[in-house]
Image (cartoon, rainbow, N blue to C red; front, side, top):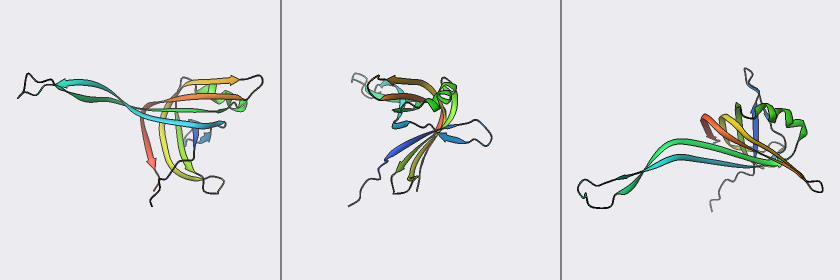
Length: 148
């Protein structure tokens, strides 16, 4: 039986802008959602041979988008990096891994490109856990690399 190769966890890394660029983990981000989509508009194209027939929809793709949402623990040590990235286009790596018994895990998939950190939120419960979340939106082209 063939089984799917599942991603067990994602790591979000922020580039430092140096040359060569060094990427470091945004520590505390534990749960990640990667949403790849397209912007589109609808057109209804009539059949010239049947001008009285109701036309069918044709979808015109007008753009590609990648949105990455992450949530997890609040980490005061990362506050300055998050604040420095908010609203700015910066390079990110979003890496998906499978647990394989090693400290690092097995890299399965990577999304790479410029993204804008559009939200960074903290939720601090007096009698509970402190959590945070963030949203990254691609700012230009991005790549998806699936490891062989």
